Structure formats: C-alpha cells, structure tokens
Image 1 (cartoon, one colour):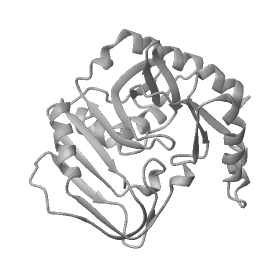
Image 2 (cartoon, one colour):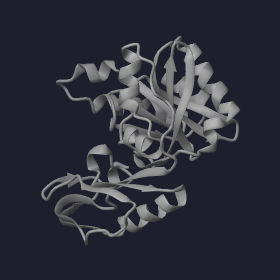
Image 3 (spheres, rainbow, N blue to C red):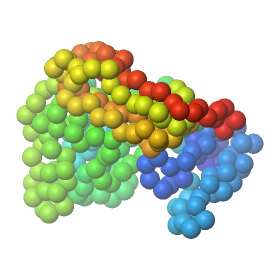
Image 4 (tube, helix red, strand yellow):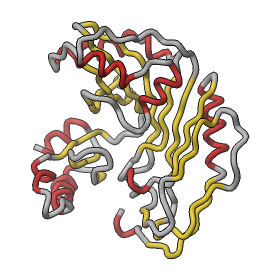
Length: 282
C-alpha cells in the first residue's frame, strides 16, 4: 500500500510516522526504497509505545514547490478563508519548517481556484463546523492538498494571524465549538512572520547567545529555545526539538518582514563542546 501511494504521488516522497509534530521521517527517491524506509520508521518506534506503530505512516510529496496553508473557518456550512500561511521548509530528509509568514493582503485569499479546492475538501470530509489548517503545495498542475488538520495550527501560526489580521484564531475556535458566531472581520492590515533557527553542525551545545539587543522596532520577540549542555542535530536531519531559537517580526508588508528576519538571524551565536558527525545518518 505504501509503495502504491508513493507511486501515485510521484517521487521523491517523504514517509513520516503519524505521531505528531517532529515525527521521524525518511526521504524516498524510488519504489525500491519504500519498503526499507517503512521498516526503518517502525524500527524507530519506542518499545514502550506500541501506539506509535499502530498510528501508521503519512506519505507526502517532497517536491520543491512552494507550500502554504489556508486557515479556514467553517460555521453553519459557511466556509471562509481568514488567512494564508506561507511556509519555507528546510532541506530533505527532515524538511523542518524554517519560516512561516502571514500577510493580510495575500492575493490567495481571493483566489477562486483556492476557494473551490477548500470547498471540495470541506464537503469531502462532510464538515459543518470547525477550524481547519489545510496545507497545500503549488505544483505545475495546480495546488495539491497535502494535509488537513481539524484544529488550531502550531508553530505560532495563530499568533501570526492575529498580528497580521487581528483575527483571534483560538477565540474563533472556541466560538465555533460553542455555537457562537465568530468574529472574522480583519482589524489589522500588515504582515507577520516567524523564523526558526537550526544549526549547520550537530553536537552538545557549550554556549548559545545573542550578540546584542536589537533596535529593530519590527522584532516583536526573540526567544532562545536551547540551553548549554543540550545535544542537537544539524540540518538536514534536525527536527522541531533541535530548534535553537525563534523570532517573530511584524511589518507593513512581506519585504520588511524578510529584511528583519535576516538581520535578526545574524545575531545568533553558538559554540559546541563536542561535535557529532551525522553524515552516515542521512
């Protein structure tokens, strides 16, 4: 079944255990690699966690096209796309999320093709109420749905939506769940983005610090997420647990956000007490 689905999607594909964010994954380039990848994922399941094995494997296309998500609200059969999140992925095989960005004036919000795709997804799943995070890839054959999450997205995406548009997704989810008509009218018109920092080297961290405080008024927060003594994997193997830091920026448009993200990245410094060669694990 895994080989058949991989053939239908077209190679390369990524096989990932369906156990939540940061789940182990294997990058596959041909049918001959699918069976070994499937066995490898199951062999990585903790022996005391049989539910991880029963969860199955999620297979997704690993093409290099752009990826975005439609933050969609369904209430009493009315379907509304309230925001579009653009995601930059890291390199294979892990392909972790490196950046998310939301822009209140995103042209995809009013794209009729995207609207039809979202409507078909909602109708196919027979959903009448709920908040959906629908992920797609832009391919030469048009947008391709890769994932549908019937709950709030992670990675600070609700925060980005609120900062960019003023729409409070957690409050919207609560309102829909309790039968209250949600407030979906934007009260802000700007862009917001988050960047997650990873290391190019693996090993045990000796020191992780920021060179100096930023004077950039567009940087809302800058958070270090590792401590001295922690061991991290480098790209392209790094997962969510290997993130070094993240920072959130706001701006009037996407260009200003990208500039602030890049400037903030230059302030992160890391040294290792010992390094680990992960090249044989790729």
